[in-house]
Length: 326
Image (cartoon, rainbow, N blue to C red; front, top):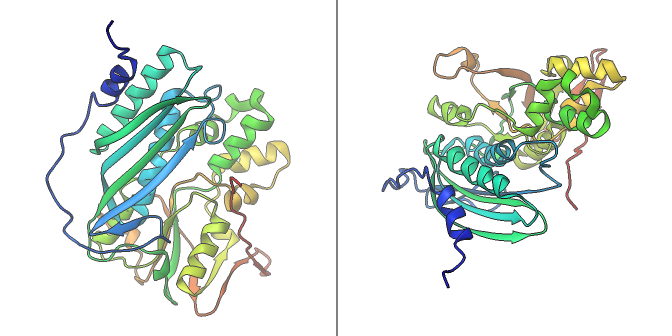
């Protein structure tokens, strides 16, 4: 009898567009243990993210391609937030036993193309089958400057910035959970939740122009990331509600259902844009080398805690409201 080649064929599809392995070691040879968006060993930035069916993606809401793209973005954003460039990946796939052959093939193709179009080389992984689907990636990137962007590097006098607009992913999820019949009325919000698009090279561009401030990706919500950054750096952070770039569609959806758009902007996760501090006095985001959708939202000073100035001048404490899987 011939062996069952189903798994072999699936792996072959995943490796179909594999980028050739470039024998180039990192130029900068730093080391960093757990605590930031990535660890660093001998110059390699390393992160790992899991995406579990029913928790991070649902195939009755999204396509296989969207689910895979969202997973890859969640890993790439970690490398970007440290000022790095992604290069190598180990990918693990748990195939839901109920997936059709078509879904399996579409997942495999999306994985293959998703890493290839970013120039990321797949160097290994594993495939299994189980009751739910799951994607697991260990992603390695390289530092492009001697000093990576660290959560602990915010300094008094820095300005604080976010990339992109806020609240889209959380608002899209709220729609799908509460008013799926209206999803077509707000397609951008739903699309961003299912398959977020971010500026994946922003972190690299920041370090190339000399930024040495703090940075992290917005995966658990702005309120939580601000507190992480303040605690890691031992500083006080003050933001202004008026400066927050709440997405226009989030505001429109909130008016439609009588909701507060600030809740989505501050406490919604899976945004994957960057929160960073910059010490330059001039607005570097006007430079040709650092273009992008970037907004100044506040400042860093001596002290502790995170505070937000309301439009009426009142300052309120910002408490972390991170998403937890436990």
